[in-house]
Length: 351
Ligand SMILES: NC(=O)c1ccc[n+]([C@@H]2O[C@H](COP(=O)([O-])OP(=O)(O)OC[C@H]3O[C@@H](n4cnc5c(N)ncnc54)[C@H](O)[C@@H]3O)[C@@H](O)[C@H]2O)c1
Image 1 (cartoon, rainbow, N blue to C red):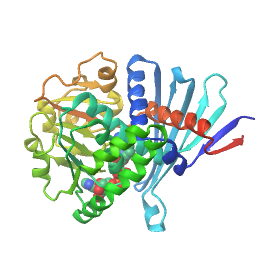
Image 2 (cartoon, helix red, strand yellow):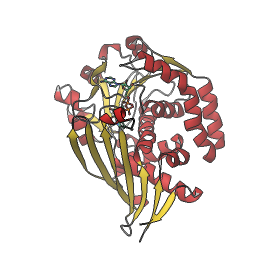
Image 3 (cartoon, rainbow, N blue to C red):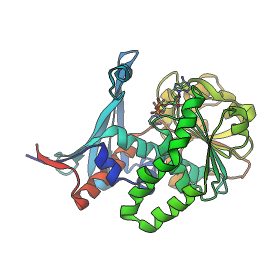
């Protein structure tokens, strides 16, 4: 028998905080670059046009764990009043092979994906950024915004644009300051009260605005995050100002696209995983259209591990393509497990 810690979404919300997850996701990218972490082939299956599942797995050598995350998307669930996304992360000990944890995946995914955007922004964006544009006001958006706030100390305004519904953007903006404080800053409180107070103070001084004009919003923003399931470009190359950094989060399967491929002509391109990004990420599109070659793209881990320079000029345009890698999930899940043991959170079962 082995003792397995089970953590639900509420436990994850209690145990994880964005600054800590940013640190472990940074570690995950470096581990990929230094080969201290292994990523195993992804498994994907579509049950129908509205239902699919994918399994990402890998091995974190320094932490002595391996494991996987299976996420399922059943698009018709909303008609039944059920969440569209389900899934779990399973962690195993690499010393004994015994299972150690079984963890709610959608909550963990929000934290680690927000953190991914923040790691890239910290490495690539101009640090004096004052305006952030968030394209998409769905499940990922609040995590992305909170993580950007943690790495952009000069941030004064956040513009939120929903390509499908300005009404939704308005509602999202109304609820956002309270959500950022209770969902995220209060989490930091438990572990780092001084940092939590600083983040709460920062949130109070930021203007959150629902944007109705994507062209103006793009022109006025120094960092842009896109997190939609779009299959057509939402951001045109001609709207982008010199010095802008873009985190393309939404494209994580074939056919998805959020950026004009021409944007890649004058930009430095980065991705979390070159193979995955060129097959299912935003990077697939400029490669298909021969705007860039796969070799033109740098893995972000090489910047974190200081093998390649990040931003080299304040006027440079940089693009980071996040597709999501298993090492991010394993690092975030391991952080949750260690804290669960420390604070006695979750249910432990003899399996
Ligand atoms: N890179 C990663 O690691 C990672 C992790 C999680 C999710 N994702 C991807 O991020 C995207 C957003 O996820 P979410 O959970 O916030 O989604 P969501 O469905 O909760 O919200 C999506 C947002 O995009 C808008 N939208 C919906 N359909 C659109 C379309 N066809 N064109 C333009 N906008 C559209 C919605 O109005 C909403 O504002 C998805 O594509 C998801 O697969 C990526």
